[in-house]
Image 1 (cartoon, rainbow, N blue to C red):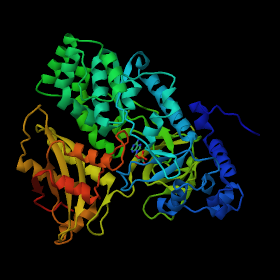
Image 2 (cartoon, helix red, strand yellow; image 1 turned 90 degrees about the vertical axis):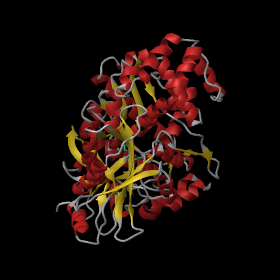
Image 3 (cartoon, protein in one colour; image 1 turned 120 degrees about the horizontal axis):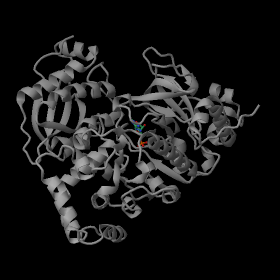
Image 4 (cartoon, protein in one colour; image 1 turned 180 degrees about the vertical axis):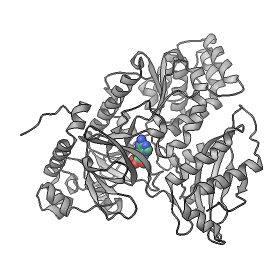
Length: 568
Ligand code: AMP
């Protein structure tokens, strides 16, 4: 019996998750059975059982030679039954190196689908979203061509430049497309904020793909509000906005001199503290929309500070490899966010990632609540059983579709010896340490860390950018508090770390290096200069690049060490 589902209906998608996944795999295999890659394992067959038996689980390095050949102009059918029409560049700041993935228009269809699903869920939970505008910090960077002449750019940029964005059904943004598409991200940021300020009474939400971009936007505002007020007062956009298409539309939106508005904005920005600045400048803000899970969780306290704790909605989970799913319960606490996987996008399998796992792989509908898995992606464009490197934990089911909490990136770990400190361990420890800052005047604006093994014993180094909660106040570092922060970080690490630290000589005292203000902005600019995209940038939890480390070292203001071994 063949079943008819409505693939736009969340109920159908989740009730028939298994059948839909089976159909997706069948489609992919029928389409790709004769690619050079699958021929090696399936000899032209599109049998699902044979696929599971013969096709190996792979990492990026295994398929890179095929992707490189396609990038260099060999025909798509090396890896994909349907023509590849562009390549996506992953941000590379979380996992270390940038990767390239082949796609075609289906990828953007999926993206538009996920955005639409997420928007419809949000509008069910928050009243009046459609009656206002969203100030969203989206950026598209210039695209390059591969040797074969196909475009290559980050996923979000590619989407923003595509017909799917251009022809979207509703326009709910304060920024015109000319701003979003401006290739100069500084000019784009200035114009996004200027447009948002001018339309402040219409703004019901403030967003960016990732929370780090939103924090970057507020910092940019702190440095540029005076100039923006001058522009609003005079009705004249600053001369350094030289992107003419952008300048023209923004001038139109500014719409002539408005000293009354400039006065109101100035009054708010001049106040001693920027606590609640988002809701003070945009008083109708109902929520912030931005990913705040995974490595973005570090920005929750600073966003709460800036927004007077309006709800933070972490809408969806996606990557350059595929879209995954949406958050069905958008108003839940950031710590409780789960994403439900959409079964109609790619074929998903799950490799058990719990300790002592024997390489067990299960289908989407067969994952077990509480277990941790690494997703294996089989998409329409040449990835087959691809280990994508994120670790997720099953938190529940909606109908037959599982919901996952994001746990961490698999390879983002610290170690100086045999201990392994995961991204999750680091974020938990950071949470405990920043609790200590709450009673002080300081707030953490950015952090990263690395394992310094240049001297023995090796030790963990955390770079912290701190800021005073009072505008323009100098950051006063209290030695006692900072040393205590070092100790709390160590106490929060796993037993293995604490044991090695205790045993003289294995791990040295943890160090916090406080860096100048603006350092994490410079770090972002550094990664963007290397090809990362402004929209997709995620500041790395663990730094591996020696160039990035040199940049950080240059900005160190003070160093603190833990003064005791953590209790076992
Ligand atoms: P990119 O391919 O550059 O877009 O990066 C994709 C990666 O970003 C994913 O593999 C995750 O590690 C991370 N990511 C994307 N969405 C989320 C989310 N909602 N929560 C946590 N991490 C995310």
